[in-house]
Image (tube, rainbow, N blue to C red; front, side):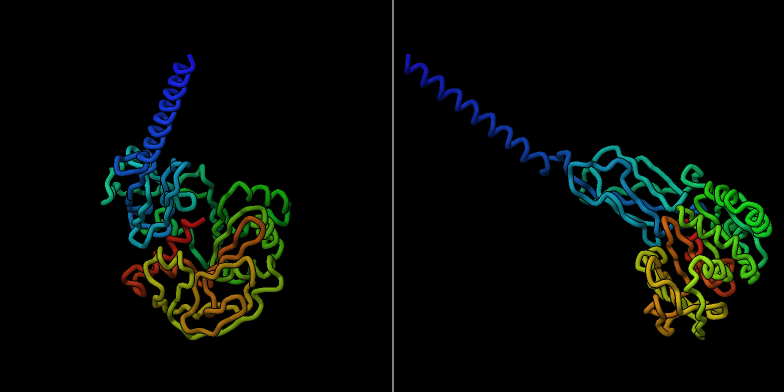
Length: 342
């Protein structure tokens, strides 16, 4: 009886050890050359903007990345629009996004170390990601830039700066609530009379603080003077004619760091931009370091306040579409990037 019991115990132990060994071998093989679920393979896609041009700066990602393994499932496209991410093999969905522009594509990712090339992905505007407003004025034509074939940003509402001023004076709270329906507001420069309408500037500040985004050139700095009373007051001069990109993400998206930009010094420049909650994207090459911009006089500046931002350029945005001063059309990449950026 005792002998039989001993034999039974030994058999049970042997079975248990065999089960453990089998389980260990099964786990060990799950990520090996056999193509287990944790294996990752490269997949490359080219992202095109709405105009069909390669779009740098877009985020390319795996729409449904695995959560139980470590890998790189997101990247930012370079100036040729290309990005490479990692993915499990099989049917996958790639997602490209830049601001309110988006594209998806289904691709069969091969279990191959040499990688898979997906078909091109063309970004299209999705108003579900946010609505756009353009405020027409006299000295800048962002609306024409948006409609240009090099940009093809066609879905936006429009009003005039005079209408905005009348509404601000009548009921600034109602105007603020109306503005909050828009994800981004493009504010044309109005030749400098902005200084006479501080109330509208303060409404803009409230809109940005509560998550709104404004983008505009030149005399938009007068709005910033009201939003940031201690800044944008000290003018500075530079005779440079080349723009230096000092933001690495933008440089990769554009494919260059320095480009000639004739007339870049002809607008208002400032040495006293905010020193926090600010990103300087571009400066005048070889210009004097300034407060908040140690690499030179800033010309493309993102000012953040609350949960939104006010991106200001000291030039008019239509300047970057001038084919006579930019025969290679490389300046267009700058305005295209920022128009899509928000």
